[in-house]
Amino acid sequence: MLLYNSFGPNPRAMRMFLAEKGLTIPTKEIDLMKAENRRPPYTDRNPGGQLPALELDNGQCIGETVAIWDYLEEKYPTPALIGSTPEERAETHQWQRRVELNITENVYNGFRFAEGLELFKDRMPCEPEAAPGLKRIAQARLKWLDSLIAGREYIVPNRFTVADIILYCCLDFAAGVGQKIDPSLTNLNSWFRRIDGRPSAKASLHPASEKVKMKG
Image (cartoon, rainbow, N blue to C red; front, top):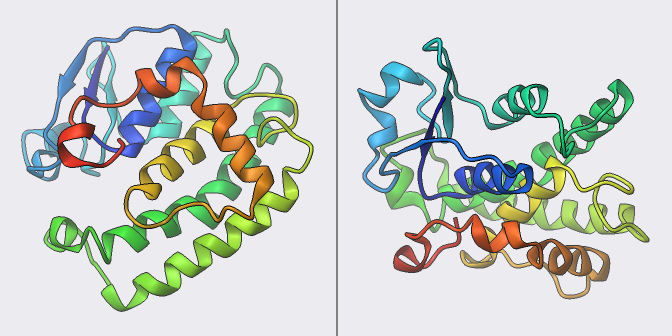
C-alpha cells in the first residue's frame, strides 16, 4: 500500500487514525499548498483531487478518508475505531455523518470562501458571500452538539471513534483561522482538551504546520 500524504486537517485525521491503530504505511508527499493534488499525475490516480488517498497493492486507489478507514478497519480490526459489531459501526457512522454534515463542512467552506479564498478560488467553486452564514451555522451546530455530549467522554457514547478524530482535527485547524470553540460550550471544550491530550493528536501534526501557521 501507498498513502498519499500532505498538510491539511483531513490528511492529519488519516495520520491520527493510523497512530491510534499502530499502523505504518509508506507515504508519498503531495504539495497541497502548490495544488499538486489538483492536476496530473495525482489526479490520474485520484480524480477527486482530494487528500489523503490510499493506493492498494493491486493498483486501486481509494480517495475518500472514511472509505480508507473502513477498508483499514476491515484489514486491521483492533483497536476498533469504527466498531466491532454491525450495531457499533452503524452508531459510529451515524455520529460521523452528523459531525460532517452539520459542522465540519460548514467550518471548512467558511474558511475556503473567506480566509482561504486566495488558495481555493482557482481550485473549486467559491462563494465568498456565503462564508459568514456558513460560520454562523457551524457555531450553532457546535452548540447543538455540546448539549448532546453532556456526560460523555466521546462523541459516540463510551467509545473513542473516527467521529472524534474528524471533529478534533477540524476544530484544531479552525481555531487558527478565526473559528474557535465558544468558551461557554463547556462539554465541547472538555471533550476537545481530552482528545488533544492523546499522543496521536500531537504525533499527527504535519511538519509544515509551523511554517504555514495552521494546524493540519
